[in-house]
Image 1: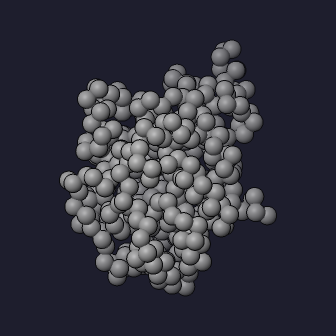
Image 2: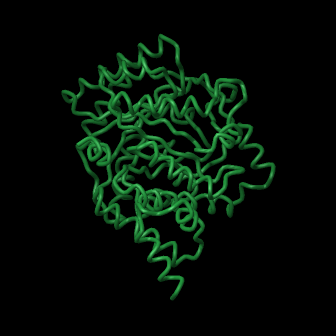
Image 3: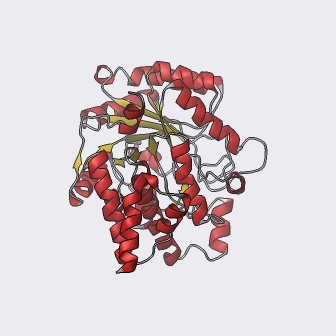
Length: 370
């Protein structure tokens, strides 16, 4: 009973928690204590953002990438991948379907490029996407590190949210995830987040959870990083192996990808959602597909732990198998209509409703800009 009382007192601190408090909650393993954590986080979700979950129709329009991140399945040096670019009209048709289906918002994602042709293409594409429904479709862009001028061009074209994962707030750990070639620098990524904030985007970031060499203290620091950077939306998920990457191969070779290891990463991912919800209160938090890659009900568990955003895949079926950032990605064999029906059932199963036809912007963004 003393332990339960201490835990209850800690959960009630919420946004006043210290770094050590975050570590304590992220270290919980007792099933009853974990349930208390998830229940407390869901209560904050219900109060601060509502029992409403919003869709971001995900269009992965190209898997060409100049970066060579050591964990990612579409890394530049992965010669197993068949590269693709989606025909422009197909992207617009998928976006129109997204709008007609009532998703409210779209996420435009690809591998990273920084060449003028790509920058011009994305700018023109954003302008065309904003014509759908007379500007009625919310738009998140997720195409990596760019210059401030590029971010401004895309913002002026109509993009109002940008997602760029920091991956980890620990620069030393970040360095283990990327080749040391001068083109994969933690400070550059951090500076990009600051640029996005200056320009006026709703800024999203997140980490990978359960990385080799990562500690609970690192994860607690990530949550504090989100607060210090005044982040509006969080897209984080458990690390999932991709078999044709340096880190994935090393993890498998070391015997660290057993079913027990995957379950541990799943639970750590759920704890990160819950503790982030308690600490940041009114931000948007995604229940990512990586959760479902590790457990059939992973996204439902994420919603019950405090997440309020889902990203149903709208990518053309013929390209889905070529946009695999990690192994066992869910929904690769489904059509967009199947994804919609599946996710609607998942949302209903936890007692939430879908915010159809709404952008579902981060309350935190508007609260701080009053």
